[in-house]
Amino acid sequence: MVTNAPDARPDLACGERFRIKSRRGTDYVVTFLHRERNGDGMYVRLSDRRIARLNDDRVRWSTYARVSQEGEPLVAPGDQILVEMPSRSIRGKLAEEIVGDEIVIRRPSGRVIRVPRAMVVAFSLLFPAQNLTVGDRFMVQSKSGNQYRGVVTALPGRDRATVTLDDGREMKLRLERVDFRTLFVPVPVPLHEL
Image (tube, rainbow, N blue to C red):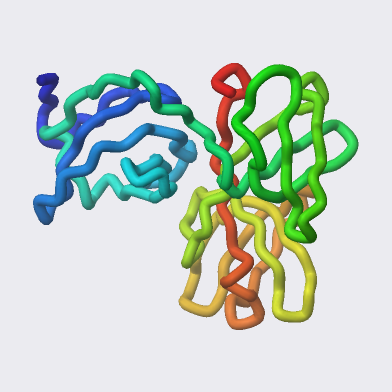
């Protein structure tokens, strides 16, 4: 068992499995996915295959211990995903295990799209977030139907978020106008891990 000082967080690599306890005593076995550069939490895959966000202030790093990684794929059929190519992005569910030269995506309409892996420039799992957190990348739709993608730079109050959109514009996002059912945080997965 590897043990660290109480507040020391180890450098984690995408796909690393480990055991850790929460401050309340809950024992987790998780697979590390991603940490935003300025964020205070990390995205992990839980033992039941769900994606979750663990905040640093809610876990005891002194309980950290590596766990065998055998047989634990990072992505699995049914995962909500975002596949980005040079000319467009496709969002849907992973329809089949990624084997070979294609990523098979089932769109919400039921249509199946096969994307050659050579065309993919970025791949993300989509975490269905319940709120916005500083440092997170996000994608959301307003109640009027506008689509927003960007990074949260500040949360100056309960009703607003300062964001930098993917096109470079900065704006104040009025949270009462956001449809939180459409809020997702893209959690990038390195292409070589697929």
